Each structure stands twice: as structure tokens, then as C-alpha cells.
Amino acid sequence: MTHQIYSQQQLQLKSIARLKQIYSEIGSTVEVSDKRCKDAWISAIVNYQTSKIQKVAPAGPDEQALAQAELDNYIADQAKVVAPEPLTIVEISFDHHEYYADDKLVASISHDDNHLTQRWVITINDKEVFRANTLMRCDRFICTHYKDGSLPVQEKEATPCTTGNEIMAQIFNECEKFGFEILNEGIYQNDEKLGEVGQTDGGWWFTRAADKTQRIPCDSAMSAVQSLSMVDVSTDSKSVFDEYFLEQPLEQLTGDKLQQLLERTELVTA
Image (cartoon, rainbow, N blue to C red; front, side, top):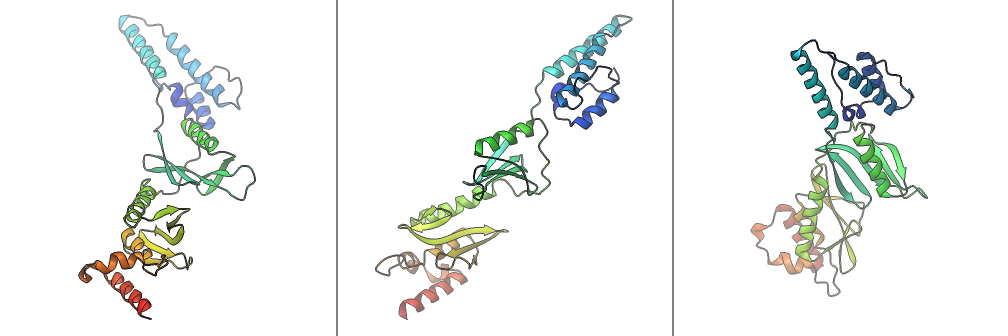
């Protein structure tokens, strides 16, 4: 045989159109039982390759050895399981999961509150490709179709898969310093929401609970959480700011923190 020998695993990753092309290229004469079925084309190609190898009639010892080696290689190739790269699942939030192969985004799962029954949605290239009533069914759909090569190819450029987790880790670490809690995508102290902290396009920001629409830019997660700590949440008007920042040397405060200190002083003395 002078053409390429395909393993069953390799053929599983091909589309029906490509399988038809391979069937024609190798000159297969095996009848395809159902031309609409992918497995039927694969079976026809594999059976034809096997029959051609087994029917080789060598004229001498050298040719016989070559034929045997070709058959051995084919059998070994068929037995080898060549699985696609395993998928990495990144939980951006409870209702947002992303699936990656290495650093490439494969698919996203989100939660649709507006749907009555099938609220979990798989999105590829910003288009819905599947929805179900449970997260696990969406997970099974992605893994199954990724493995057999039938999942649409994600063309959207993905951010590094660790970005979401790294951002949350930084926010969590800074909140721990002040005894804050992260609940429902907000930062709380004593069951009272202080506001939110996040990062967009590489820039940090925070939003106070009193003004949800105003995103105030800052230079780091530490600066954002510290800014939220200036909100007065205690009954005796003594904030976390008073307990922590007033003890810091002025030379260690950046420009925006000095401005915040000035604003806080004006509020207290007013």
C-alpha cells in the first residue's frame, strides 16, 4: 500500500466530508452501509485497509518481511489510543465556566435565568450551540463532542485561563487583611455590603455600595479593597480606615490614597 494508513482513532476525528475524500483516495471498494452515518464510512475505510494488507502476496522473503512489518505497524496503530488534549475547566463564577485545551478557549457554559427549564447554555464564538437543565449535561456535551472532533472550533481569542482565578485570589487575599467577606459578587463586612472590586482590560476598579454605577479606577487589588475599607460601617462612626490607615506614615501613601485621606478628614471635621 502506497497511501497513508489511517487508524480508527484518527478517522474518528475526521468530518464525514473528509472521510468520503479518504474513501475515494485509497480506492476503497467496501460498500458503505449508511452513507449518512460517520461510523459507516469509518468502518468501510478500516475494513478495506485491513483487507489490502492481509491480501499482500509477497514473492520472496524480503517482500514477505516488508508486508509483515506493514501489517504489524497497522495493528499497533489501530491499538494505540490517541486521545485529544485533556480539557481544563476554569470556574469564573458559579454560573460561568470556561473550557480550555492548553491555553485555547474551547467553549463556555453560562446560566440563563430567563429560561424556565434549560437554563445552562453552551456558547462557542458567542453563539449558543446547546442548552440543558443541568451543568453536568453541558459538561458531557462538550467533552464528548470535543473528543470525537465534532465540536465547532472556537475562533475567539481567549485570555489566559488562569486570569479569572488570579484576580479573585488577589481580591480574596486583600479582603482577608480587613476581615471582609466576598458574597454574591460583592464585598461585605458584618453583613453589610461595602461594594465591589474587579479588573477590566488590565485596569483595577472599585464600586461603592452606595453608588453602584460609578467605577472608580485604582492601581491594584490592594488599593481597591483599601478604598472600600474607608466606608463607615460601624455604629460609632469609627471605620476600618480610622483603625488602619491613620497609623500609616504619610510617605508610604500614594497620591490617590493621600487624596482619600484628605477627603476622609474633611468629612470627619465637617
